[in-house]
Image 1 (spheres, helix red, strand yellow):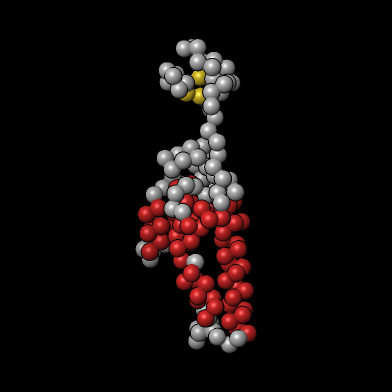
Image 2 (tube, helix red, strand yellow):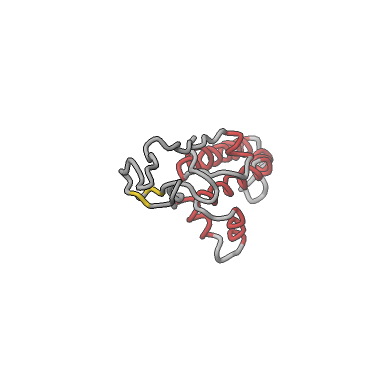
Length: 152
């Protein structure tokens, strides 16, 4: 991957130590990768979330908590007539609505898409497109218009 000189804009080989304009490519400041805190993960609409963070830090715990609350609803006989939601699990879905949107927007940012891309999921025939793209495709490597890739 070629490196662009910040001074003159010339593309240099990845292992270049100096640019032709005599700019020191080794000593230049490197951007720091931002760390995602749990608060920023769940409540901020800015930044990026990697695929592994999306699955390991959000989706799998979310599903585990939902299933646990569904079991509690079943044991307490608080399930609705369809059996898919109960009092505790429904409350959890209501409370976690905004964090789901926030993580989805950050996942869109990692794919270099606007957060509005989530609205494609409301279209009946196209609703699988965002789910597959955000859930299984890796983000853009390196910085994009939404910032640097983050880590947990």
